Image (cartoon, rainbow, N blue to C red):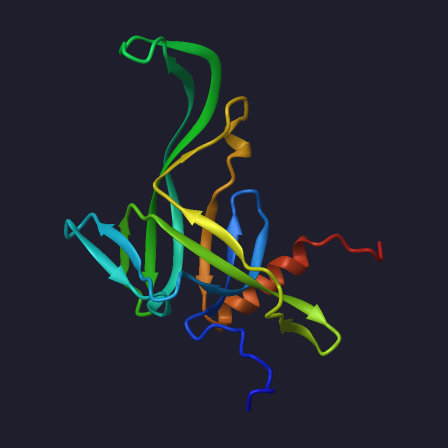
Length: 184
């Protein structure tokens, strides 16, 4: 039917939630670029692994090191002499632990883009999927760098991603608990 509503939800999307280091939670359909898989370097087997998002139960970020890096520039283009500007920016190094649906874990560096298309409350139901809502983009990367003049706390990162129907309910509870109660 050419006049039927267009299907806008993704077949490869998995329900779940994403929690950031500042405590905010995003609940909805979690997906990656179409046809992509998570590519993680497995530290135990010393090889790269490709994992479909549907096989993943959770992804956790493990902060290995955080520090304030001094900003520098080259004095002249042709010289390798550098000078420090006096400003600093936050840097963080992370490893990720992927827990599969069957309980196995893989730990190592990861570099992927994750999208979350939110679930919101609508008149048709308490938490209906809203395909017209814009998906939020989050970067999982082994090395993160902030803007000069900011601190480590302002460099927000993805702390955990939980996938599946139980995770979706857990994410909804976390969102409800974090909202201020207007009745008080």
